[in-house]
Amino acid sequence: MNTQIFLLLHLTSVILMAGVTFAALADPHPDKRRQFLMMSGTLSLLAVMSGFGLAGMMRIGFPGWVMVKVVCWLVLSGLTGMAFRMTGQSRMLAMVAAGVILLAVIMVTYKPF
Image 1 (cartoon, rainbow, N blue to C red):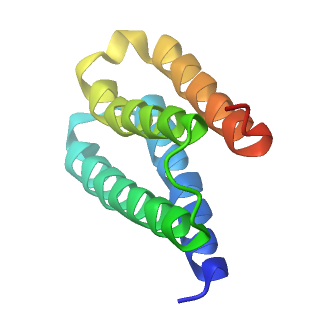
Image 2 (image 1 turned 120 degrees about the horizontal axis):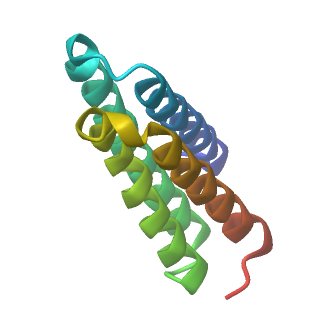
């Protein structure tokens, strides 16, 4: 497959995963829990598979910035579930999500290590 296809899949799934996370934080109604968790899990799996597929095709190995992005992915993946357990903390969780997304973008843009 072409690296551009993996890049498109990765970026689309990460953007949609962030959107689902923020939507769950904005309205953590118990009736919507299953839908949000299913979408988040599917997009999370697609994001990690396309990300590692892209890294493998580009032969970049596993540098430090990729490890930081994996941790960011884990945190962002867990925040959707936390939105339904910690409904009173949604503002703090949204700030964590924004910070994790910013850190991931900085890592992929500057590749500091």
